[in-house]
Length: 279
Image 1 (cartoon, rainbow, N blue to C red):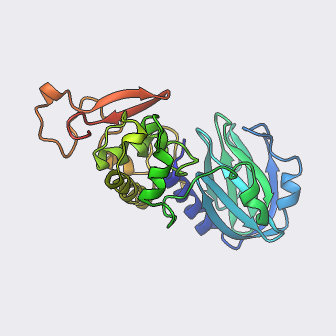
Image 2: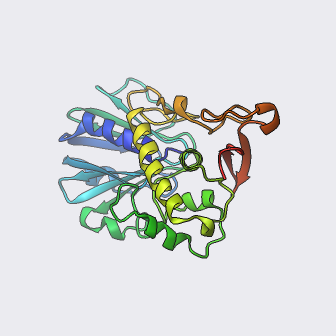
Image 3: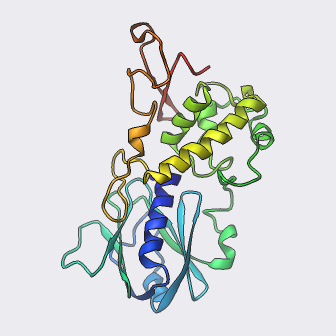
């Protein structure tokens, strides 16, 4: 699933491609995504102008001149494609086509776990997608004290807590492992055991790692591609994710004794960590 850096990368690329464009027409070839695409989606966005873009958590928002916003979530395998002209043939899983005076936006989603819907721009905060989301990683209210208040009396493992979108929104499985490695915190520790210094480190490395990943175009592990068809490159900088048995970049241990980077399953998701450095 595209996490925050990948969604930010997609949003930036689509904005560069279509900012200020007039939507000429649209076509919904497959409305059965995670939720049904509104039956009047194509009608409502046609003959409007794209006036702005933003990201909320793992969602891309496209603001239109008629007071509506398109809410876009990419699910497990969704991706945007940008074309200068309408392709002669479409792929089987090209589900939504938006033709603008600057080119064509195509939403492709093999598994159909994505979401595309409409909302009045002034009521986005009240939409069910956003009614319970936590703070954005760069929100000034994201402080060590805030995290401690959320972790207090919480026995859930800290890795699971970082995936809770009601605490910090946008962190997914890949980046949770990387953040905890940098903070030198073992992912199995109870959230309530985190102290103020460690909470501060979580915030610092959350912002640092997500920013670095955005600069690298995100991480391509399975399906993710940028709208221009290129892959992301941050996976080349992963310290622990998907590196079971390897030596972590900061460790000088005897790998024959330590076993190198370990893999654990938490909440049905793979977790990677260094058993020597992370405490």
